Image (cartoon, rainbow, N blue to C red; front, side):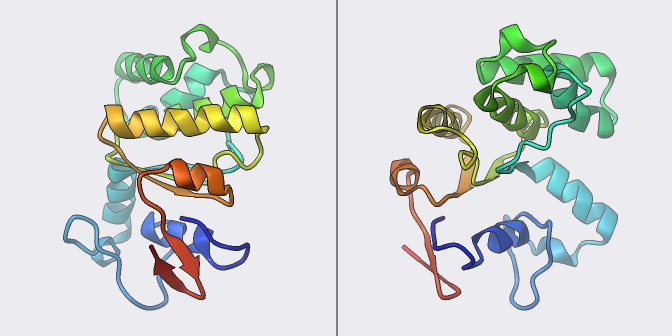
Length: 186
């Protein structure tokens, strides 16, 4: 999804991802309106269905890459060994098998963003929403993240919704939506 600054791309992404409630209209996911769910059920729905990646990785600096990725699984109360196994696997998928024990400050910007992607995917959601995932990265590293998102889309049959200002990244995605004056257009 592309559009000029301030048009509401991030707001729409947050509504689609059930982080924010719509002030009007409805959101349908697999034929259901998740906003009809009570708060605990809505939180469960969000955690099981949608992984989020933001422009700023929001990783916990005192934890290693592995510990950061394990966190959602531990919060979901998976056994520690299972959480570790899942985290190691998904970090391998994003090319960080050799960086498991590194703390956030020891990672490059691109590596930290790949950890954030791994964290978003550790519970195997069918949808990944990314808000400017390359916005704080140099062009080369941004291209690597773009390739990773496209690969995950193909390999895992993952629905990926990316908000970006980067026209080149938008063109590389399978489908583009333009948010113009409050309307989504092809």
